[in-house]
Amino acid sequence: MKIMIVDDHAAMRRLLGNILTLGYNDFSNGKHTLELVECESGEEAIEQYPKTRPDVVLMDFQLTKMNGIKATEAILQKDASAKILFVTSYDSSSLRDKAKHLSTLGFISKNNLSDIMPMLSSQHHITDTL
Image: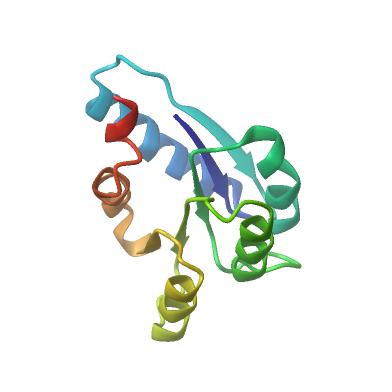
């Protein structure tokens, strides 16, 4: 499975990567590999998405220059079937509505990062690869 992490903070990309690696190993019992693609900006994610073709994109909302909504819109224009999950510290009903309107996988607050693996599993993005 390949997951793209889009966040402008290197420490958060590392934290998400660690959570995903540990969680994926638990779900797959070490039978499958996880590849992580890290992007520090929306522009980089738009550029890297067609080159890397991730199974899932974890997108921060607040990014430098281009926010996560605009980056998500650009990725979805290139690939309407892209699977994008917002992972952000900005938890508001308007952001949740925007995420829903864009037909993303959903929204996870950075205060609840432990919800990432259950969310991905419930969407069958991890269990389908096992």
